[in-house]
Length: 159
Image 1 (cartoon, helix red, strand yellow):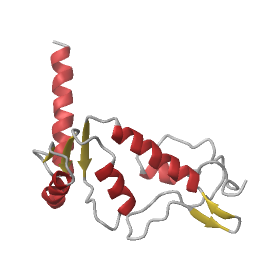
Image 2: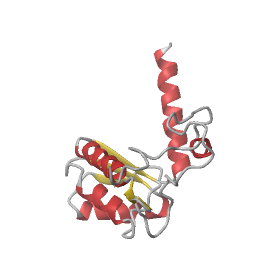
Image 3: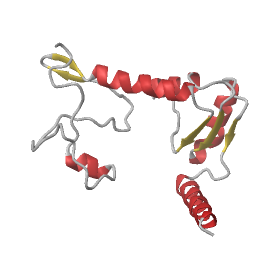
């Protein structure tokens, strides 16, 4: 099948799974192979959500399906947290998805460091009246508070 010569999805080698924090995980489609085609989309000005091979464009359907699933999730979410993402114009596909797919009455909470106020303003300008900066705009601080809150809730449940 054109566009599916390399399989229905990218295979993920152990080193990439480990980089993502999954130290004991193995991709069953990777097998014992030593090399794989790139699957990560790294932060760069130009993002291609496909792989050009001599057989044609590969993985476009895979990435398009992930984008479709993200759109469905955003459309059905009452609260969306943007954490550590700058929402720059160069990232047009993600930007369009995040600024156009949520319901206008969704709560949008932004914790993106120095970009937080700009992003909150962009959401409000796009009609999201419930867009606001998080109390903690730095990812590490926000995660620590969420973790502490969860731990506190668990402790109170066991009392």
